[in-house]
Length: 276
Image (cartoon, rainbow, N blue to C red; front, side, top):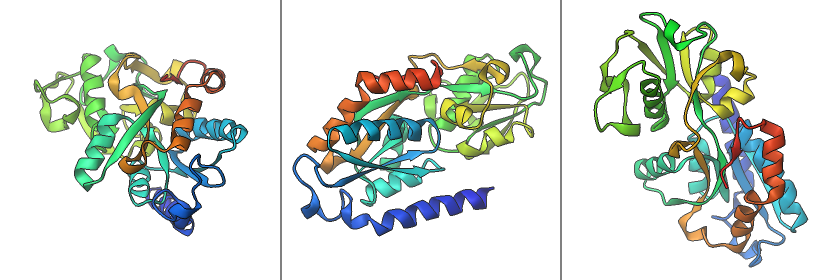
């Protein structure tokens, strides 16, 4: 499965490379001041992010903007593609994740607007109540920066463990100082977490992957982040030098529009909401 995901990401990158000259980091001559006549490529992870971007693209078309959605299956490739100029924007992450990518890769990607609110939850195929979590249970958490710590914080909020003071979203399993259930941690790529549910007792999964995998939140969801959780707020990102481009500001405005809010409400029935 990991090989298949890698192939999908590589195919997406190969596709992007073919059009690199027309992207924000490529041939600037093709861009009119308001973005007219130029394709705006927005990267998004498969699932809720991509579905909302497709709705945004449809609204953008009404305003004379040509938006192309490029879907990815991992959390790292979309930022790399944006930094390298193969995308104009991407929509799939929260600000701490973006800041960490910049720090690790010496890039200058910036948030230019909010998109959707996606919470993380504790999901299980085997356990139906937190009080029934067995001793020695295996818990799968995301292996990417911030979201792994986010999962551990969620487990702490659920009363299943205690982390070292001050670790915050940078927490790793090594920062667990109290583990009364003797939980064992399995770190996996976020997209693989839903598929791991038959092999682990619990998993901390963000709602976009919950929805795209067909998980029944009423039957399999045990505990959720609060709606005001900062890491639940997803953003639209651009390269720093492009953040004030008028066509990008139009995209931000479309995310805030009643049409997109209505789409999100009708599509996700409150599990995912507009962040605007």
